[in-house]
Every structure is written in C-alpha cells, then in structure tokens.
Image 1 (cartoon, rainbow, N blue to C red):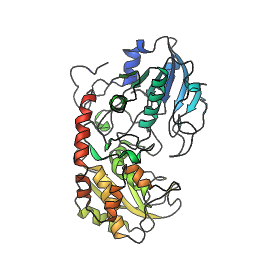
Image 2: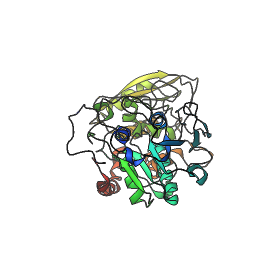
Image 3: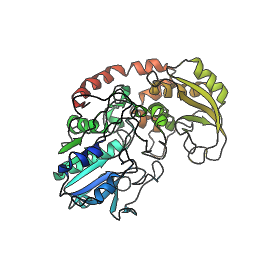
Image 4: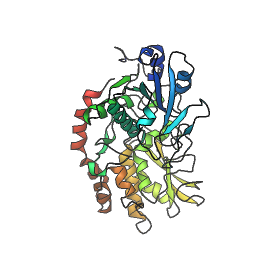
Length: 395
C-alpha cells in the first residue's frame, strides 16, 4: 500500500486512501461486515462519500457508522455532546464517540469484522479526531479487530514541527500523547506512531496516499476542501489554527460565530488599530495584521461589538503559526492587562494549559518572558520527537 517510487509535480492531485481502497485494495474489506468512523470530510476527490460508496457496493456490508466531535454530518458545535442515532442518509446506526462514550464499547463493535477510519484532520495536536482514532484503535486491539486508516494529506504540510511536546500530566482529549503542537504527519502516519510508540498494539493497516509531497499544503494539491468541523471552513483557517487556537484559553474571541474563525480575533475591550500596529511592528515572519470590527453570532461575546485583528498569511513557507498565536496573546496580556484573563472552566484547569499541554507557557507569558525564549525552551524535546517520528514517515 505504498505511495509509489516517484512523486508527481507540485499542483497535481494526490490519490486519497479512500480512492485507493476501492480501486486497488478492495480485498482488504471484500466480504466483510464493516464499521466506519467518519464525518462530512470523509469524501474522495469527486466529493463522493466513503460511507455512500461502501453502502452501495454489493461486495461489502457497511453495518455501522461512528461519529466524532461535531457528529457524523459535522452539525454540532465544538465541545457539545453528540448522541447516538440513526443516519438519515444510510439508515444505519450511528454510534457517537463524543458523548457518554469516547471509545467504541463491545456492543458497538459486536458483529463487525473490521473498523475503517476516514476523516480529514488538520495536522495539529489539539484536534480531537486524533484521539477518537487512537481510542478506537485501542478498543479494536482488545478485541483483535483489524483497524484500517484511509490516509489523507496533512493540510499544513509534512515537514515543520512547532510548539512544545505535551507533558503527560496535562493529557486530555485535546492532547493524549507527548507530541508537539504541529507534528508534520498524515493521519495514517500518526496512526503508526500512536500504535507503536505508545503501545496501542492494534492490528493496523493504512491505505496510503499516492503522489502526496511532504512540502505540500492543501492549496498545492488541487483537492477540494470539505470542512472537517464547523469552524474549519477553509484551507486558510488550517494555516493559522496551530497558533490562534490558543486564544480559546483566554477571554479573547477566537472568531467563532464569524465568517473567519481563528483568522480574526478580538474582544470588546480591545482597540484593533492599536493591536494591529503593535503586532506589525514585531515584523513576524510571513504575516501581516489588519484591524477588524466584528460581532459574533455565537461563542464568546455573542451579539457584542468586538475589535481586534485578522491574521493575513502572505507567505505560508515563512509563516510560524505557533509563535504568531503566542505573540498575539502576549501583546493583549501586556497592553490590556486590566482586561485580559485566562479562561478557567469548572474543572479548575486552565483551558490554555490543556491546549498547551503544559502550564509552563502560561506562566512564562505571565512572567513577561519573550515568546522567542518560550519557544526556544521547546527545541530539545521537539528535536527528540523529530528523530522518533522518522521511522513512521511513509512519504
């Protein structure tokens, strides 16, 4: 199931794992009773749903669907529990993996011969689909049930590593394993890493991509973008998300409830012109900041007028999203110290610390440590991870 001996030129369309399953590797599922973990992003380059293609094929039985955060059709808000139901399109049972259960139980897996996984991720540690996959792999490992990942491109490339490696004490469903914020792997490569490095021990197969280059962002592939979650509407969102998602852990709006989630950030107490001027003076690599006014329809400050900035990426290759996100937070923390606050939910652990996978970053920002110094402290663990990941690269 390798990707072949040569890569096509930049701008050509990779062959997705789901396409290779039907065209080249159907023997993996022929005559089987199959469960599928998927959502609205589980489509091929012609926007045909993997679930639909399986159901219509007489040589395989699609018996059940499993849905992640946001649900099988991507309709639920972030963090909202999703119930199990019957899928209106296929008539199949849908087992929710983002409600009372985060992992398939024996009843859900009963009668299945294997479990397929086909969803688009975004290449960032705190995206929950990684851990839906990992927990499902562990459930299959306990039952001896084969687990097959249909690989997809990492939309922000497969080379760059950014951010700290998660500390085990801060493990949660937005970060279960010690990997950096930006880990530079496809979802199939992540499955290999999780399975071996973290001893899941599943009977794992990955139907690999053909023709994907590690240097490629999604925009280089000519593939259509299908939002994997409600607030990931465009490929531009994926580029900034590794850094601006940290804003979720503060009282700054991350732009949910606007047309530019994670690209525009603000709050009622901010002066967007002052913030944009300050950030542009930092001359951060690959981006510029534009003052914006917006009124979210949901999330933080719903119905309130906010000011802030939009992050405009002018050079993807030079852009450093994690540093950019932390510089935005640091600037607001310093310039509006009387208004800025970290979010502390009912559980008592800072939202920011869950995202960061440590409390060291938050404490360093509070202490006035320059962001460049905060990130420099991450390099040793990041380099160690980089060496470990080499053996799981398939492209």
